[in-house]
Amino acid sequence: MPDTRDTALRLRQFNRFYTRRLGLLEPTHLQSPFSLAEVRVLYELGHRERPTASDIAAALSMDEGYLSRLLRRLRQHGLVRARTVSHDGRRRWLALTAQGRKAFQSLSGRATDSVLSLIEHLTAPEQQELVSAVSSVEALLEAAPVERSAPLAHTVELRPPGPGDLGWVVMRHGELYDQEYGWNEEFERLVAGIVGGFATGPAAPMQQCWIATLASRRAGSVFLMPGPEPDVGRLRLLLVEPWARGQGVGSALIDACIGAARAAGCRQLTLWTNDVLTAARRLYERAGFRLVHSERHQSFGKWLVGQTWNLDL
Image (cartoon, rainbow, N blue to C red; front, side, top):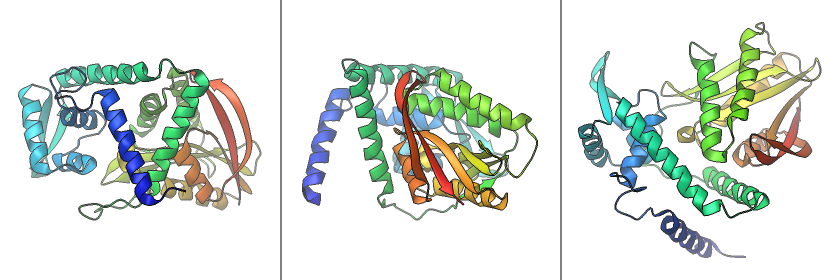
């Protein structure tokens, strides 16, 4: 059994291997004019709604002075624009310009191709094993306490969906599951069908949605919908933004769903997920769900192991 120091040394060895294989130590990233730090800033701007420089600095744990220099260079290249917040002239919202979005999409495609070159020789079972291993690493490290330069200034808030929220749920599911798991448009169509059924269904105790926010920014979502039997509810479409993970968003959403199912008189809450979603499965286990069925299936362009989890209420 390795001790903690041995584990740290082994992880450092892996970091050296991975950064070398992806060329992350080169002066510019992905054969572009930009450094890795600049590409990370473009990524955050491409995945956030009206962020400020402070939001970006906090998400990347980056010194604000250093970030200011990066943003100045990106503005000089015509990739980023800033707009003063109407109710607070001291703050400015940042966004990618049309040229910036084009540059980011090109970089995103190159990043995917770079990783594809690493794994294209692997068989489908080997790729599945790799994804499961990466998911396990992410879940274990997310669960560990993280030192921060300052305590979190915001708490998780839950609200019903408002204008644009349901479209955001579909869009972010499609984007995130493509980026993190390589799932194709079949998954986004599934999500769109679920959300469409919710939107057109009658308001009812067993038909609810919660949007989680941190600092007034969308951070996650979950749905409570009718299950296979009249007194069984179904938890669906749990989502937590990458920047908001480890801050209690997922647990708050699951707790809200459980509480509403109990209030609606459900005897059981059920959900369906896939084994590669390790972080989500840990949240379900902590909330008291138990795995009752597993089945291998081919969906979303991948071979996956689907799982049904139940919670007796």
